[in-house]
Length: 225
Image (cartoon, rainbow, N blue to C red; front, side, top):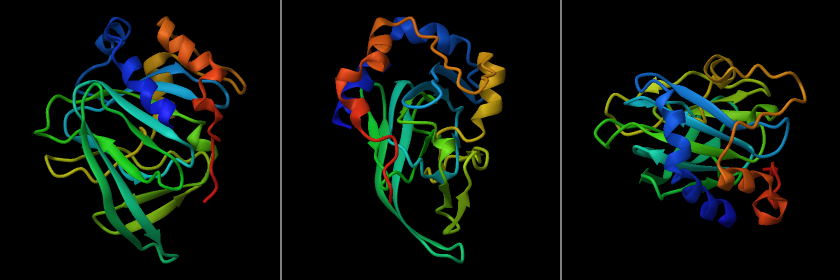
């Protein structure tokens, strides 16, 4: 993940490439633009959350890196202990307010997190998210740190929708739950099984995602807990 951490801030700094994409994403609503979406393996997406919007805390079960392109992204990582009755013991392991040049990386099983925008921190964020695989292929968990509960997410279940943080500390998260329908509407991507997408024209982005010699793709897409 050191390679991912070194790579993403440089990609996020490509203002010439990202400015036209951001201009197409309404600032007042959730926005998603896939940059690379193969059938399996690493994929890259540009995500915007409007002011004050977070989502439910959850795991990915694949490695992930997040880097802001514009705005301010609040990122929290949690220690979680699950009980079969739906209770969860949650403690905040790390909290960061990220701007361009910053990056957060996670590897399972330490991938329980939330990220998005908290009112008062600065402009709402446009961030790139690099995932080791399609997280919806795996059984995951979703948490509510406020209620101290959790629920299991079956493969294919994106989880609950984003919620407004209303200026409070961020405690909800996700890598854009409910994305699949939004992807089709916002980017025109209606993928058939086995198809892949790459709308990138940035040489740096293309090289980063096509280079198997970079080392970052050698991380297993899923690490068992």
